[in-house]
Amino acid sequence: MGSLYLTSLNSGSNGNCYYIGNNDEAVLIDAGLSCRETEKRMQRLGLNMKKVKAVFISHEHTDHIRGLEVLSRKHQLPVYISTGTLRHSNLQLDPSLVRPLTAGMIISVGSLQVNAFLKHHDAADPHSFTVEDGATCIGIFTDIGRVCDNLSAHFQKCHAAFLEANYDEEMLEKGRYPYYLKKRIRGGHGHLSNREALDLFLSCRPANMSHLLLSHLSADNNNPNLVRDLFQEQAMNTQIIVASRYEETPVYSVSGHMPLDSEVPLPQGQLSLF
Image (cartoon, rainbow, N blue to C red; front, side):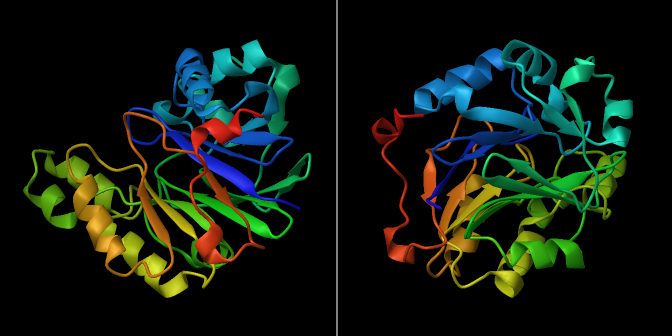
């Protein structure tokens, strides 16, 4: 098995979509951008939509499903979605493209193995995912109210991960949000704070984690430089990237077989084969 390629096409309350693939096939985790914007950003990165073989939906909140109906219909993409999520989403999907999703399932998409597990979030049936290809494992861990044993165990397997760092505690406390919303965010079924995410990273980071993409940052209650500096101080060999809510990240190449110092972002021009 070779490398896995990953990028955040967008990450934040305005839309979430993550790409993970190898040389032959890829999956999208969530589809919170419009179909047109998803296509545009993938094209800029040299990624071919024909390589995408399925979309996996974490939960029914609009910023994770906004573009799903058009994207699935236009490209005839199977959608893996739990019964509870589908019921609460009001999505009008082609029934022939809907695939079941339950916690503990390991779903094969070509040589990719997608593992779904439950998380704490204020949604009907929310899931997080890992995507594996042979020796390489990528985690997608966002919209998480609190760290649980399941999350910790999956994090320890990852060579790279998208990890939510939604808010700075002090910024949220002093910010303009009403009390009920502050309570929702930090109440155990909302989002992870910078400090909670850092604690997970420090306690469960595997020695060969090459990339950490800090994801789903709040526009009001966080600052990209603040959270980057917080993690960078203790990053060691892990490259810290902040996933933007305004644009795609570069495509990163990750391999469980490669020495850490050889895992660097690929120049976008080298990915035209996608």
